[in-house]
Length: 443
Image 1: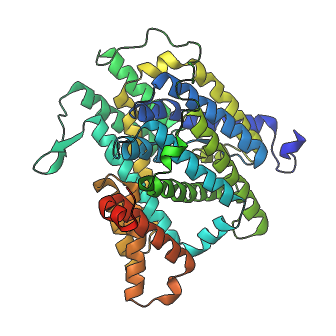
Image 2: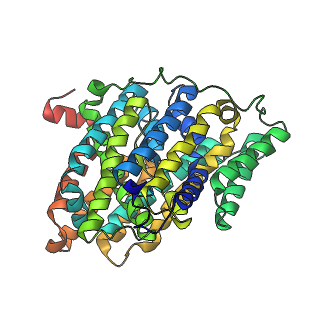
Image 3: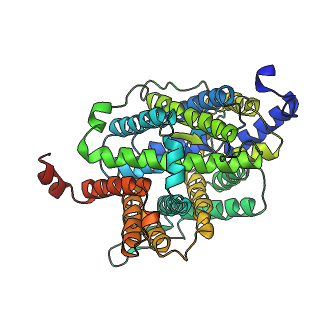
């Protein structure tokens, strides 16, 4: 245990185990949630459950040893929704190709994680733009959650309207939403998974959904999705914006989560050398784990904000992350239980995660005209266009235009110019493929 420097960090094996258990209970929900979300992409759910658990185990343990911080990793919420509803359903591409997109973006992340690029991004991209992206993704996945619950539905006159709340299954979703909001407001540890349990029991007792006939079984094989990624097809011109979106969003999400979690534990200050080193090691773990995730058959891997619960329980070293990973072994044997969980007991989690991400808007400086406009367009367009790529692109482009009009030359740095050009390319390829294809002579 000397490897984790327990004495130096004034902690113990018992304290780190308790912290790891707390983190596990707080983020255990990701296994059934990711199974459901990526299952909507047409992927076999049994294999997804095993793959999600396996990559979480590997990622947490790897980060514990690699970075020695109490940060747990798993399949990122938001990006898994973009994988399914943005790429596979929205762009109508095979899930194998979407896994290829994830892999390519992760490889870029790996290569750049070992350079000063991450520091360059943090110094050159205004933090308010990062907050806008987080809030926009929050609005996007909240919209998806409400739609999948049946709480909002298509309407030819108004585009969307409220669904049939008298439908028992929709009512289950409303019960789930009320419970998860209540547990969060009461600051109950493990509130997400507790909400799923309460809502599921309600649905089973009243016969709205079938109750599980058994709770445990041997893990399902991951062979239907293992090594099924199609990298060559993912290299098509039309998918370049998606690769860039996964990369940029992954980077901002990781930096934001790691900064918040590790600052709570007083693990690092990103403005000094030691703090930057710890941040770099965590980002490297994120990147490497995401490559492994695409091979196993899951979407992008990232640091989980729920790690903060383990930090508050006393976690200070990588041993916390290792214990969290080991505890996820139990989820491998819960296939019958997870498979019986009603979908509308899980979709409310998307709504709540969206609420938490949307709260970043409270920190935005709206006195800056460029920030005000770009934040509004980013947040509004992600759900309205059903595309994180479009929202992100228009956000950077509008920021650049307003700064240009105001002649705020000092705010137009190399990072802004680079991301604006990338965003312009992404917008053209996403929104005007025929025009762009003729322009460069590509199909």
